[in-house]
Length: 181
Image 1 (tube, rainbow, N blue to C red):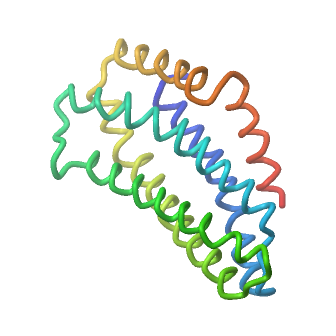
Image 2: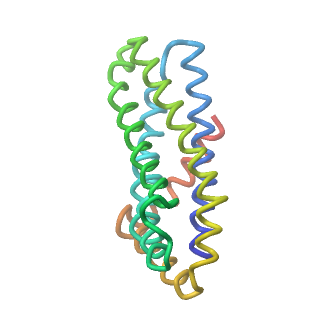
């Protein structure tokens, strides 16, 4: 699997969790209550798999390599991707901040969880679409086979050192559980 295929595969895993998160927002809309345990599990996935693993691979390895190969930093697609990563982090923090009150049964906090989670879902789906259909094809054009080998090795190192041995697989399993309901 090439480095880009790895990132695309991870996107599929993220989309599974986003589907589960969307079902949770619909449930909150209907009941006014949040399944805080399930949302805490999703937040763990978003913070660790999405941000510490996936975004780290992009921000520390793919994006710099693309810049080395001539992609413009200012005003280019990487600037947009980095901005959206930051926006996603802000949405996750907002959900986490509202969760303790939602856990106590506070309806307005549950609504805040729903709204911020919905914003995150919308942002991430659009972001994944841009990466899969714009940024990654650009990467495949400008990066050499050697660049791809280096990126794959760097990605394996991220999985081992940033999140730990076996954790990547744990999140894959978790994504399937959350997707199934």
